[in-house]
Amino acid sequence: MVTASGTLDADVLIEGERIAAVAARVPGVPLSFTVDRIIDATGKYVLPGGIDVHTHMEMPFGGTFSADTFETGTRAAAWGGTTTIIDFAVQAKGTSLLATLDNWHDKADGNCSVDYGFHMIVSDVNDQTLKEMESCVAAGVNSFKMFMAYPGVFYATDGEILLAMQQAARIGATVMMHAENGIAIDQLVAQAIAEGHTSPVYHGISRPPELEGEATSRAITLAKVANCPLYIVHLSARHALEAVAAARDTGQNVFAETCPQYLYLSIEDLARPDFEGSKFVCSPPLRPRDHQASLWAGLRTNDLSVVSTDHCPFCFKGQKELGRGDFSKIPNGMPGVEHRMDLLHQGVAAGELSLARWVEVASTTPARMFGLYPRKGVIAAGADADVVIYDPAARQTLSAATHHMNVDYSAYEGMEITGRVETVLSRGSFVIDGGAYVGSPGHGQFLARAENGYLL
Ligand SMILES: [Zn+2]
Image 1 (cartoon, rainbow, N blue to C red):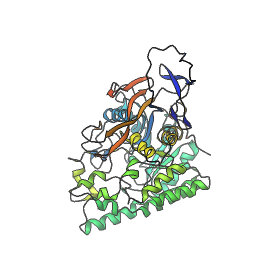
Image 2: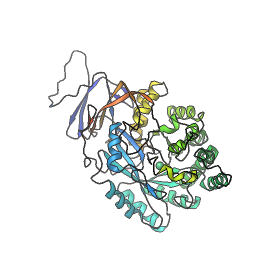
Image 3: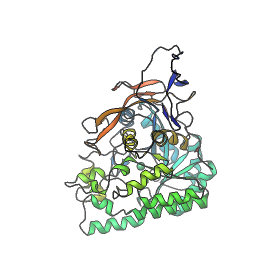
Image 4: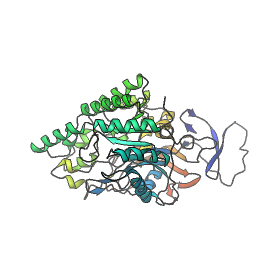
């Protein structure tokens, strides 16, 4: 068994939907439980199910929708050993938070193979929105994402951010921030297009890491003034990491996640010829390769606490192609929900992360950070029986031909992986059993979440 606190040679007893007991093995002493099925995981890792706190299933963006539905996306998540997702409900301007939440419940209800929760994207800060934040918390949604990027769409001014942060602080919620200076970026984008620089790599060039660092610092300052817990989403740049580390050193409630694409891919992928670079367009953009070592180090020092995917898939054909001749029209987002556990396991194999830290950043900390602990994120008596059996010696090659996400390319096409998910249980039910999907789309339940478990 691998947990955030280390490894243990143990038996795990599951009764119904819960873990009933964990019993350390004593050499020569046989198993004393009477059970109706034994899963032999000898030589494999037994992990708490992965928790991906950043997904966008069927999300509207730029006149299209991300290609995975809750049904296809949660099935792909299960294939990759993720048994909980937290997806983003998206408030459109002029609509209410509660109507938005109802809408997202309708999309997910009855369609998910694994359990799910919601964050709320706040894009229209007004008196009603601020009031409704409190109702969202009562409805089990106590994290609110805001954007310093995308002017005219999701962008909030510093004043609006401050108001929402003050309200979040009052009601025990966390503000999540997309920290890029979108006002400055829009100027750089317009300049690039005017100069005829329309290919995908200019998506990266027009969003320099300094503007992520600046926005991250500004968000941290606003959160400090509002006394509000802050969680920086999809941190990609060393500049932003330095701002987070400095704030954490002062004891401020500032947290951050990164994503596998920032650990493994780079702006060189955005520069692939024949519009292939469009497959790698996401925001913040993929960075020069030298940022990767800083991100791995940040994961070790806990300045980066979580690895999520920002799973937001758009097919190359018909969706990414909307931006041929103008990179600013390429839908932003990449597929990834299926491969997070595997890609992080490569970090273990490469000596970047310990086994325990792998489980911590992929499951235990996400559970604590978003109010699901100790129901999720741990293998212990009383916890939900979300259990993954992982074969660390198996080999696989990532490919669109074999993945289960509803998208026509893989960002990691041809990458060889050491390790593979073998069996997945969600609340005691098999979802993946010996390499086959045996789940059902109505199994996954909505998770009402409590307060961030890390607040000082
Ligand atoms: Zn996102």
